[in-house]
Image (cartoon, rainbow, N blue to C red; front, top):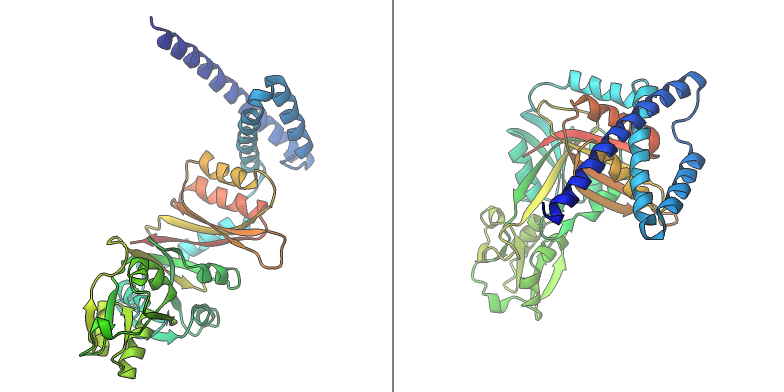
Length: 380
């Protein structure tokens, strides 16, 4: 037998012992939970956890101190989660989600009044037509107006871009999420192909100014850097930029916009596909004031504040890992007026219909303040 095989045998034997000891510990944790329930004691006792960490790190020595701390903190997370399930009754959020699942129709609506940012031809409008068969679209100048239209009931739904595959998150939308109460009911990815559009007869060498949105500038950075002699002016929307150029009649101006806007506003495409990447996608969300959870929902979004202390983010992520949940996105945005506190946004690949997931969401609401369940929905 080789040395490696001997080492593996030793590790297998130790792992078996660890598994047995872990089961024994969790059985005792269940007894502790029942005792706490009978006597009205809290799940977490920080002094007790700190004492165990200090004792075990001292026992294992300085070389393993950090690893020992991580190991036992993970063990504590699993123990607290197990106790919370045994101690708690159904959280109010769990019932709210169950009610939403029950009252939501089986099919996503074909007709609705929908708020979109920009003008006809915008990428938001293209996504709206993809989601709804017969939408009645109301256009608004900025993202906040879309949130406000849904919040005030002027529109049933709103379409908003949330992230781009090559240029990252749309920070303005994430910042507005902290201000408005809404729910995500669907999301969709749209392939973004940017073209350089100009009035008929315009040549590339004639252009002195290009209008577009700042996200499009970031997605076309190579093109922008290659034309330092041209002034780039940002607009609220790429479609609005195309409309502006068309209405101006200028022969020295152009817009970075979609090919759809070329035919829509009578412009000519001087160059196609000027974005940095051929795989350039923007993810859009459809929001509603009411909580709607349609059949087949496979993605969950949450928003929560996490304390500004060492290990707090790790401890939160470990809770997701303990259930085998895949976190497909984590986004943080500073909370204005606080001392480096952050609001975190989580996207999870999971079904809210799974009992353990629903219970976990209810537990999170009780442990984070603020905590917002943004929605459970399908993405396509």
